[in-house]
Amino acid sequence: MACRVCRCCYAFESMTDRRLILALGRLERAIARVEAGIEAAPSFGHDENEALFRLAERHRTLREATESAIERIDRLLGSH
Image (cartoon, rainbow, N blue to C red; front, top):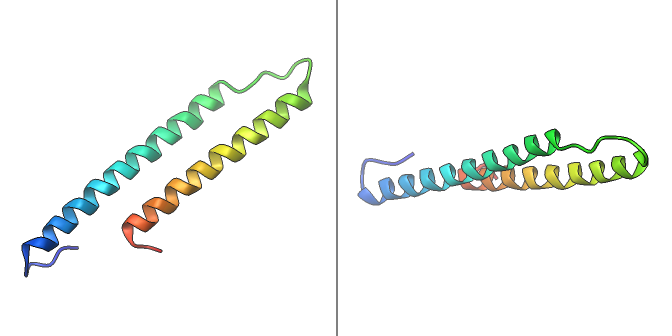
């Protein structure tokens, strides 16, 4: 939160807000990719084990990307 003593505090708050908005935008795009991935999930057929393996790898990759985005947002907010 900005103090009312100097104008530079308001600039800091404004920059933090902008960075937060950008970070939230990245997170929203990542969530959209996850949702699209769910819709495009492989259908199980002739090689079910291979499809399950690919799905598990895809899940791991998306989970790591989401966790990374959340960590960046935490750092922007000064939580960690």
